[in-house]
Length: 103
Image 1 (cartoon, rainbow, N blue to C red):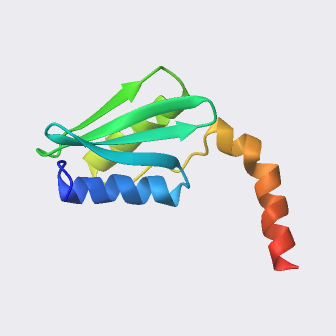
Image 2: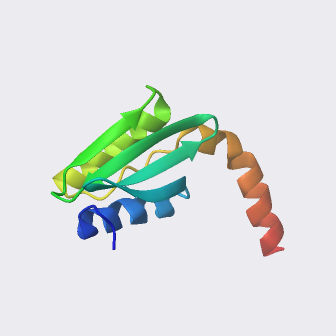
């Protein structure tokens, strides 16, 4: 059982998994911290037991995406769908990998 609100933690976890994000989940005082990495960037989103969300990290595309995720969850919309620059860079290789599996 995590320290953060279970329902909100599940929503964050599902969004990060759906977007194939590299993340680690750990408990901190009164919250669950999701540390996310994308390329050289790292940021985190904390889910408190009250359901409150807080984004931390160096300003960049990843932190911006996590802030959009926070907004979406707070509004009840799920998660953002935009690709991060690191995903865009990997896109040609991802396509090659998927096409080779289909053949």
